[in-house]
Image (cartoon, rainbow, N blue to C red; front, side):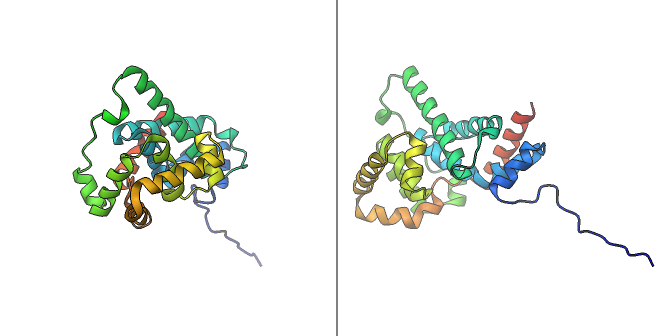
Length: 219
């Protein structure tokens, strides 16, 4: 008597935990990197957008950050969450671009022209609450803005935020307090209510970023 056994086929890119996907990429499954990009794209965009205050510049920084993540993937040791590790890389990339922009342009950041928050894409994916919150957050000083987004929108803890920004935990607490105070009591409530609508990065934008990143690492 012959017994036939069959095992269910294993998907090539079965989404797993971040460390599992990292291991797959390092083992040679380059295409699996798209899982990480898709999973953390919005987090990366929001972090870069908080620093650069411009959608286009933030997208460019995210793409460059993802390429850096891929090139340095073997350096991920799991000592922090993968999301924290990539956010730190994104903030570093955005901060470097901000410093370069300031060297090239002598206009103070607070007097730079604001990008129009009312685009067709924004209208499709965000409500008035999200747009109002974006305008208010954009008016915060750079240090406060980054801390507020990392803590209250991305929900990093104090230690993770400090690591991402390269500052002390006490500085995080002070900046967060000042940022919340500057937004006023009613805007603090909007951070919780409107956070999911802040600087959305999904749909076609996310797909475009995945395609660009995968093309960059394949080149």
